[in-house]
View (cartoon, rainbow, N blue to C red):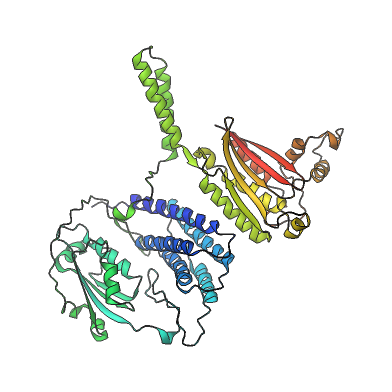
Amino acid sequence: MAFDRDDMLDTYLLETSQILEELQGVVLKYRDEKEFPPEAIDEIFRHMHTMKGSAGFMMFEQINMLTHKMEDVFFYIRENKPKEVPHKELIELVLKVADFVQGELDRLSAGEMADTAAGELISELDAFLESINVDKKAAGKKTKSWTGSGAGRETTRIYIAPKDTIASHYYQIYITYARDTKLANVHAYKVVHALKGIAQDIKYSPASILTDENSSAEILEQGFKILLRSAVSKKQIGKIVSAGYETDSISITEIDAARYNAGFKLFGVDADIAARHSKDKTEYVPGDFVVHANEPGGGVVLAKDNASAKLKKSHVNVEVAELDRLSDLVMKLVSQENKLTEGKTVDKIKDITEDIRSVVNDMRMVPLTNIFLRMNRVIFEASRKLNKDIECSFIGDDVRADRGIVEHISDPLMHMVRNSADHGIEDAIVREAQGKPVKGRITLKAEVTDGELRISVIDDGAGLDRDRILLKAREKGLTDGDKADADYTDEEVWRFITLPGFSTNTDITEFSGRGVGMDVVVSSIEQIGGTLDIKSKKGCGSTMTMRFPV
């Protein structure tokens, strides 16, 4: 069997990227609320649980441990409903976890290992969990617990006093598979992985299920044996190992500690160990399962099976270069078509090529939803760091644009959003004194009109200060010495702020005052065939609009 990890890794990257997008959308949807509603808590928990499981299955230990810890936090919140949970801090922690996972995805995409240490962020989550666990010191008072273990370690996380810990139980689990089961070792590992979520300790035989393909034949002949120490009941274990693991028969027997410690030499005394046949008609082909050993010290990677690789939407990853190549071929076809003589055949070819052209154009179109969501996060983080209360709204986020544009507008859009948050939105005291709502607003708007795609950043802030900009422009020698201030149109004045090195800020902060920003925006927009329009009214806010021909 030829081992090829690429397909499996591509599936993992695509699925996890989609989860991260959905996760960020859910979190930022409730950024201005006091807490997450129950349905949001459940959804975030599910996202973390899914990422934990897939990372564990791929043996990406750092991602697995980090998402497991974040899952623990939301499990605790869901089950114990603590009254005081710092909402903004929780959002920031979720986004930090998302950033970490995205960083690891980027490393994997670049052919590197997903091995960045997550210990510091895990410690932050532990501290947060400790801070909201208000009942932990109450004598004799229990809170609901979450028992689990991170990848590569068998530990128990129980958020109750040690004296309240449920006593451990010991089990022997015997599993058989149909004689015609393909890659039984992979199915066996899936069971082990599922049990690790509730295991205090787990052993299994054969132990080489990830590294030795021959273990599959041994499992079919002699069955798969597991020794498990856990705080959960036999019934709960049965529910875990009975669903979706292609097993033929399962025997779970509770044993005593002495027999558990004796290991596998006493295994099977109370269990029927005759492997049986079943009617598993699933068709498998090479590549459905992949066991891949990395370099020494690099760990072991196991692929998903086809059933677990189903996507929520029917997407196919297509390289942009391939789309461009297809587009070029269509243009060549059109060119050759024009050389043909007139007739019905030519008309049919024209119809076909036009259909192909339309399909290619549609394939290149992607919605602006995700990039708008990313800007929502930029606004959230800016509002926290600038100590301003700013909300974000979308108009036309479902508008679709050519991926060549979407892939290049993220940076200029971020510059404009940050400028609106820093320069545009006033402090709460100033806004209140001017009779404005204390909470500022930044609106992202997209529309296709008059043959143009227009993407705008609109704020209700202070607006641009014409006099101040002109004064700075004269100091820098950017104005015509013979031209009076009153002779400059607003559009001409606003254009000064897009020149390299121009800034009216005197304080250097993380967001402004370094003399870079809007010139980069204009340069980036012009590189992809666009232009930037600026409109502003002092005291009423500004609108910056990127325009691209469609």
